[in-house]
Length: 341
Image (cartoon, rainbow, N blue to C red; front, side, top):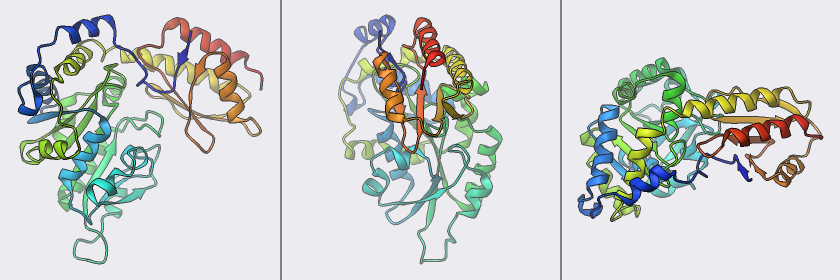
């Protein structure tokens, strides 16, 4: 039995999802004639109370498209120093959009309205890049699945309005935040100009992200998707998986959160653990005690058919997900309790 806790992207389609994929009605989405893709896009737009939506093969592409449609080359966006768009999208911000980043030292991947205000370049000072966009992430990946307080979003929106800045949300794991905080997706639609949501992480679909936005800004999205190579044909098979996931896999995220919390509590009691970050959703970030080899620890787990992620600088990550069963959970907790350094 392999226990793979590297990411919530390692899941495989459930039997019900496979049935939905096999029964999908499809067409050519480049012509916008795939009925299932259109249905998924409409479903998500309505869910978040936004005008329109567009399917992308990956979350990175959806985020990069959003940055492209919000900015011009030579401009600058504001983001936390741990932001996925900066750290884990291959330098796409500079490569695709010619945009630089003003990185903020936030708290577990989250920044405040005051920090945004402080880091906006004066628009009439032509020696510095023109600030045009703020990118937020909820939940935060490198921040350990942390969730913003919604009131901070509202404050940041006001700052963006005052300075005529765009506001994009990388919502790859927004479903986890919605469940953990009991929030309404329509409230997010009122705050953000664009939102990317992922179907292949906590929801367990094989692939796919969707970019949501209002009509004016989204006019450019389909052209940018084409330029980035994201125009696809009979994607209704994958869209059907996404619809099934939205209908069946959102509420169950609470189970992943519970398991992650129990892992966090178990780790915190072990002598070989230096620190465990607060665990709000399905990601557990922890650090080993001084003198404990990260490589040896991960290899020891691997000898027990357990896979986790190393994030560098002594930071280790565990992510619970759809395919992490109760039996796996009990076994993993027992191994953590009995581990000899």
